[in-house]
Length: 257
Image (cartoon, rainbow, N blue to C red):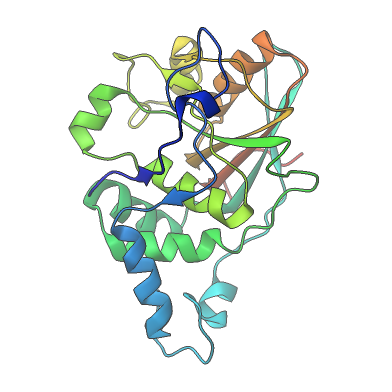
């Protein structure tokens, strides 16, 4: 899968800061890689990307498939031990069929049809109140260079780009991840809670008053909490919100608050 493309901006147009990494703030005008064409073609075909039945109107997913997937879940919260308080997390759906299969097919097998289905579901997410391009950025959970070399692409960043376009809110990649950390997959709950505490660091100050931290799947919430604690520890005035595609199931998951 090819990486995404963005329009280059003149260096003088960037915010000057001694610790800001090049291109930390992505421009609002984004040029997508060829997989964006798959989304456009799916919409043009007017067939549901899940059941493949014909659609009467242009779109990606039919009403029947949409109704079969639990959405608009109540928010959950994870405690912020270092910064105090809690991070509210809103999930698109539960990590159960078909969401779990779609996410796995895209992340592990680079299935474009699974990505198109996830994009269709992302387009159903309502934008949080009082979040605009002027006061909010979306921060995708970063990966490491070693993980990028292993996988070949960054699925969370790709999904975050579609969410950014859907909501009209820019991405910001000023939170980076240390190489050499243990991957969360396969760890038990206690290990997941302890694992990401020192994985992240800020490459530049957060440029807005509000931050939406985005991940594809939330299990314990430890990763989002670690990023939230990092940001709050440096800039306590920043408001934080978590967004993910899926968490738990209707019977087992994070506690609703």
